[in-house]
Image (cartoon, rainbow, N blue to C red; front, side, top):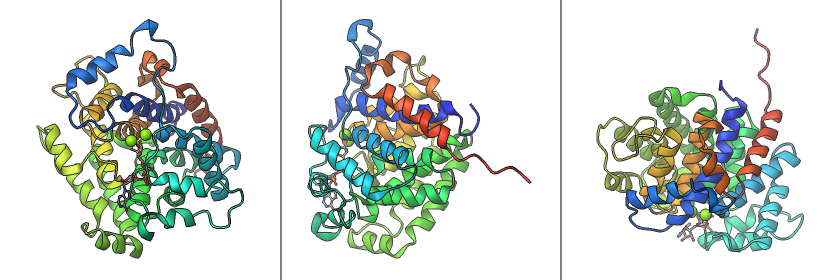
Length: 349
Ligand code: R7I
Ligand code: MG
Ligand code: MG
């Protein structure tokens, strides 16, 4: 479909659920042989598997809250979104939430809390979390706002409800921007795409809070830009091993060690690659490749799935895969609602 088509919207949200559900199998595994990944993915084709057999985790649970809040409030409402996270957690606490964020979610379970950003600020001795929990749920912001300034602003605020460290919330900004650009068709020109992300993040990371967190955590001056430059270097190489990707970009639970990785997975899998099945198309390649990296596989596949889904569209998701994932149908319907509300372009002239 064309830029911001309904197929791209549906692909983004269904791709995210798919990544979370299929990636759950390997979360925390150090090394995942391709054989095991393919066995897992091929198993999804079995007719008698039943529906929704792969359950979604916190990544999707929180994404659903973001979607519902953006839809029912017709925009960003911090109180509503915070309460929605807290309620979801209390109803279904066993979805694999990060160990730190649970404290925030318990404190947010007070309706009409005065400052909903306060519990997040209290995390990790007052510096806030740098985990990828803000980024993993950032995709819907790209579907709810057309202006890229709004996408950045609200993805950041939405993440700050649980992640007040800039290395956490800026991961959400980067992920939302990647989905935003992908929806517009920007992955047709991969180099332009990565350059654009670097340019945007240069501006984002020049803010004082970001500089300060980077110093405090002994990261380079522009941590996300730095990683995006590494993505670009890896893109320019003919051969890249899994080990190199992990050592250059990471596969961990920090936003800095997973958002650029997810972006790389998508870029790398735009082409046919040695070691990935020849009958796999881009969407399937992205999923398989995210899983062989090991580490935070549900989250990296979820973020990569959203970006890839926005590029290839929902029709690229194998039907059998979608059927196996809890919440895929809901994601599909939500994407249609968000598409209906997506602001139309002003008439030219
Ligand atoms: O970021 P968050 O929501 O976790 C998301 C991850 C995803 O992989 C999900 O799939 C799920 O498995 O969890 O939750 P947080 O608790 O805020 O952060 C995750 C973890 O990162 C924490 O439990 C810490 O281990 C680590 N972490 C930190 N450690 C030290 N100092 C995050 N921030 C810090 C920090 O500032
Ligand atoms: Mg998870
Ligand atoms: Mg995870």
